[in-house]
Length: 120
Image 1 (tube, rainbow, N blue to C red):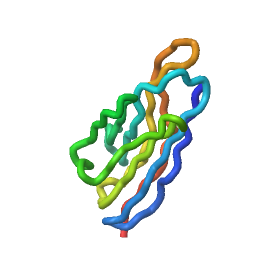
Image 2: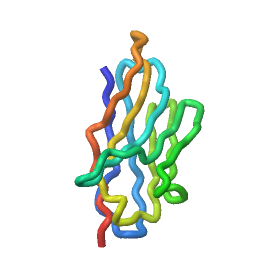
Image 3: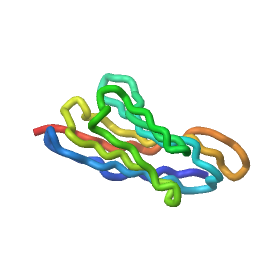
Image 4: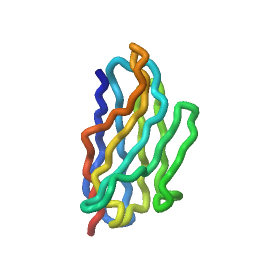
């Protein structure tokens, strides 16, 4: 019913930048929140950043000042701009959205994940 397609991961040197994109499609009535989580090997999945339909944002402490999140409501797309990347940012990044589909059901959806590797 709903698909999330992520793009933009890859290998980057420390101090570099990457931009992740996530586009939602399907039987969408309204998107409530969109965000990004990450999971490094041996660690739990954690919230990186999220943005609500009203434009309110939240960030994990270690990425504040380095990452920004934005969205294009017309395209049902969320972006994560990652600057000043560090080795500890290396992880699989997952797009997440909480939305209402056309039958009124509200639930969360996950993308397939995209690898971000920060290494020299």
